[in-house]
Image 1: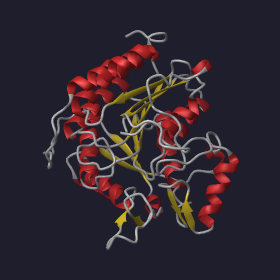
Image 2: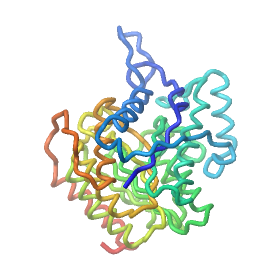
Image 3: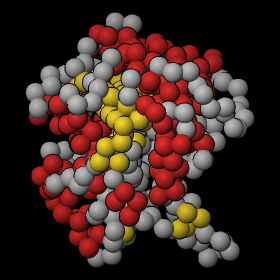
Image 4: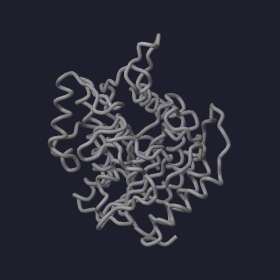
Length: 361
């Protein structure tokens, strides 16, 4: 088995600058930090796939720029225009934490590269395609940037599949933050099943009013088709595996999607300052294994979070090994905190209580 990884170096031109982590620079500090969503993290991810034990199973393929018409399949035209203009003016902040620069219009390459991966699977030239891109996308709503994201890559891929005649699409998101942008794009639709596993962080302001709680189930035709698995801080490997085995797998078997889109983030890792969960390389390997077995081909993955610049790359490698059905060949270089199993079990019970009118447990 091989995995087609789509890459376009223009995603590196998006400059998020320095500051107090994701906030603006502070005069109280002697040294400012890189914004967590920076080019180093995906350079390391690309390197570990090129140099690690999975290198023989990776087929590298070129990405491309998206067109504005393609962006408009999900996003409002006025919103697209506003981001293009801000970049032309030298850049700035779309939200308190979401930055663009003069070079950020080029990372339309992120959206285009995700669409190139989708087209490869839809055309049959790939069965599993991974779009290694930045910035992430799953927080972007039709007319609202959020959480480092300008355009919703999982939603663009899902909509591309629908526009090309795919009847049922499922999105599975294991980034540690709620995939609120994806939720917003499909909240009233039954043709796309969205499942997000994330930490219990709630709403975080005007750019992210969604709570990510299990009772956000969708409306109209989408009722029961928006699933939030809200896991406690520190949930760990077993809680994520249980969420897959006890929620994601039963739902996908009942929904029977023709294409699975995965929002693949590594910020649930044990060493990610943006996550505070305790998922290790072994946990990500289990996620990859379960998803690979379940999807059976016709799988598109988009790179989302992952801000521990070294460990996130190792966790991606473990995910890919799982997708390939291989055992882990890299030793975990870092320690971890034991799982909190009981609280994870309670979180999954809350999900099924909310879903009871729509799906069978």
